[in-house]
Length: 137
Image 1 (cartoon, rainbow, N blue to C red):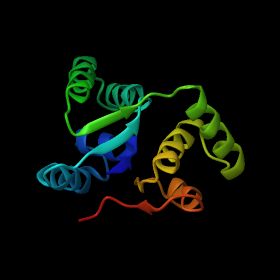
Image 2: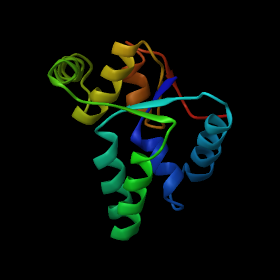
Image 3: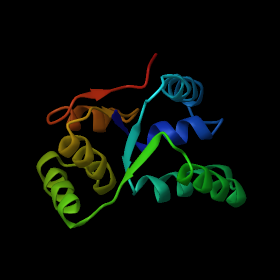
């Protein structure tokens, strides 16, 4: 199990993304491993849908991707309840993180899981509190 941030999911879905091929291969490898579970805060849904719609201009594609993520058995979405939101807010203040990034770090910290991201700033800052990986094979 590992927490995978939106940069990896969006990278795999948008062909023009700089990390498209690597993200696609990495996610495919994770799914090939039986029993692999990828975790994310429920915030993943609007982040991915919005990024796909903005970057491609294809609103129907963003909706289909959202529907697919909701049916994805290997993806466990963690609701952003009050406790997790507070943990994320404290991490955001302590590590100078963007709010959305802090949610991924909080999930990783609370569950004791590594965080997988392409975001170099997030790697550096989150690395102070959780193990951080790039999605490389």
